[in-house]
Image (cartoon, rainbow, N blue to C red; front, side, top):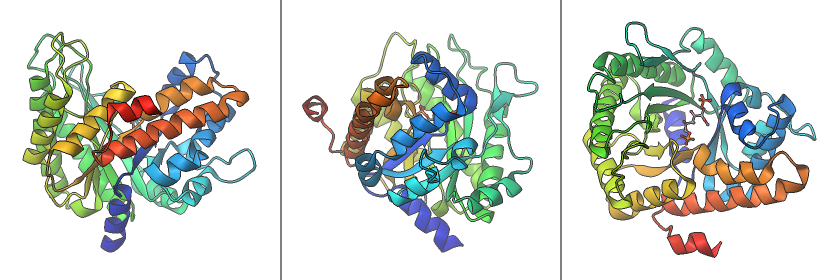
Length: 343
Ligand code: 5MM
C-alpha cells in the first residue's frame, strides 16, 4: 500500500507535468457557464469536459492527473466511452474531489470549515472502484479586510487543518493519494506580507495535524496558494517577490518528505499564474517538485473559445493545449514571455 501511494504521488508530480482541476461543483460550473451564456445541463458539462480530456497533446505531454467532480467520474463520452477511460488512455491519472464544500464555522463569523467527513470511508472505497487514484479536499482560509487581525482565527485554521488531516488519513487507508489543499484566498485588500503570515501559520497547522493523524507524507501532494498581494491591495507585488516569498514560506513549513507541491491559481490571470510558477522553478533549489493544479488558469481561454458551440471545439482544444504547454514549461522553469507571444 505504501509503495502504491508513493508511486501515484510521484506520478502526479512527474517532471514538466501538472494537474488539471476540472472538479467544479454544480454551482461553480454554472457560474463559469453563465459567463459564456451556456446553460449548465449535464450534457453541456459532459461536452465541455470531454473536449478537454480529448485534447491529446495537452493530456499526454503536460497533464499528470485530472481532478473530477462526482458526476464526471460516472459520465460517458458521446460515443459511450467512460470519461475516466479517456483520461487513462491519455496516460493521466483520474482523481476525485471528495469534500462537500466550505460551510460557515460555528462561533466564527465570516469563517468557514470544509465539510464531508461523514461517510467518507465508504465514498473513497466506491471512488477507488470507479478508477480514482487520488482525491482532493479544499480548505478555505479567508483574510479579513482592512488589516483585521481577527480573521482568520487560529480556531478556524485548526478546524480546517484537522479536517484535512482526517480526510488525508482516510484516503491513504483506502489506497488513494490525498491532495491536501489549504487555500488562503486572494480576496481582499491585504498586502503580500499578510498573505505570507497567514499562509505560514496555515501550513504549520496543516503539517502538525497530518503528523498527528499519522499521514504518510511521501504519499501526499500539497496544493497551496502562492504568496501574493490581495486582489484589492493598491501595492501589487511583482513576479520575483511572489516567487521569493512563496518559496521562503514553503521552505519554512513543508517537510522535504512531501514529493510535490502543485499550486492552485486562485483567481490569478492565466499568464500571471504561469509566470509565477516559472519564476518559482527557475530561481530556487528546493526539495520538492513544484508544479500546477490549476482550474481557472488552465481553462479560462478554452471555455471562452468553446462558448458552447460544436464548431468551436477545435479552437477550444487549441487554447487548452497552449495553456497546458505553457504551464508544463513553467513547471520546468523554461517558460518565457516570448514563448507566450510566439504561440
Ligand atoms: C476547479 O475548482 C475546484 C472546485 O471548486 P468548488 O468546490 O468551489 O466548485 C477548486 O477547488 C479548485 O480546484 C481550486 O480552487 C483551484 O482552482 P483555481 O481556479 O484556483 O486554480
